[in-house]
Length: 406
Image (cartoon, rainbow, N blue to C red; front, side, top):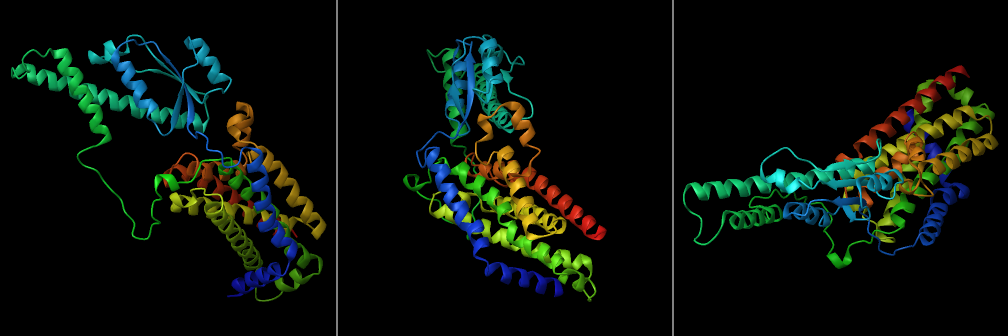
C-alpha cells in the first residue's frame, strides 16, 4: 500500500502541473498535425513495400507468379530493371525494399518438378526485406502447389482415359492450374475467428486512410512520452534536493519500495498519455490502432515501461529540476532523430537504419507501423516488445544501482 500511496501522491502532484499537461498531450497532438500536414496529411498512399521485379520467363507460369504478387496486400511491383545487375543496384540504393528475378527456365523446370526458385535480393538486417521475402515465398508456394495439383489431375485423367474428347493434356493442365489457383482465394474450408467484444469492421468506404499520420502519430507519441518525464522525474529530483527522499528512507519504506512507487507513477502517467493519443489517432486521424487491439496494447505497455525506466534513471541521476530538463530533452532529441520519429527510416540510408535499431524509439515506432501500415498483428510486434522490455529492465537496474550509490 505504501508503494501505491507514493505513486498516487506523484500523480496528484503531476495533475496540478500545467506544464506537464502541455508536454503530455498538447505538444504531441500539435506536432503530429504539423508533421503530418507537412508530409501530405490524409492523402491516400500505397502503403505496400516496393518490390523490384525482373521477369525473364516468357512462359505462362512466370506470369502466374507475377499475377499473384500483383494481388498482394504487402508488396507492390516495380518493373524498373532490365538486368539482374541493375536490379541489385536498385536494392543497394534502397529504391526498392527487395528485388526478385524470375529465371528464363522457371516455367519449364516447374512443369518438370525440378527444384527451382526465383532469385531474391534484399539488404541484410532489414525488417522490410524480411517482410517482402515472406510474401514472395508465400506466392511461390501457392503457385508450386497449384502446379503439383494440376499435374496430378492430368496424370490421373490420362491413366483413367478420362480426358475429354478433343482436349489435349496441355489444355487440361492449364484448366486444372487455373482452378487450383482460384481455390486459394476461396478454399472449401476456412477458419474464422470471432470475438464478441471486438469492434465491428468498418465498411470499405469507411476504412481509414493510410496517410502520413500513420508515421507522425506514433513518432510524436514516442518522442513526447520522453518529454513528459520532465515533470515526473522532477518530483524525484525535488525530493532529493529538499531531503524529503532521505527522510522517506528512514521510514518503514525500503529504498526499493520508494523507487517502485515513483516508477509506478511514471508508468501510469505515460500509459494514460499514450492511450489518449492513440484514441485521438483512431478517432480524429482515422488510424487503425484498434484493428489489432492486443498488438497495440502490447506495444503501448512495453513502451510505457521503457519510458518509466528512463524517467526513473533521470530522476535518480539529476540533482535538481534544471538537470532533469536537460537529461530529458537531450535523450528525447537524440533518440527521436535516430529512431525515425521525424523522418521514416525507410527513406534513410542502410547504415543509418542499422544504427537506428539500437535505439528504443525505433522499435516503438516500428511496432506501431507494423499495425498501422503493414496490417500485421500480435506476432509481428513481439520482437519490438521484447526489446523494449529489455531496455526497461536495464534502465530500472541502472536506477537502482545509482540510487544505492547515493
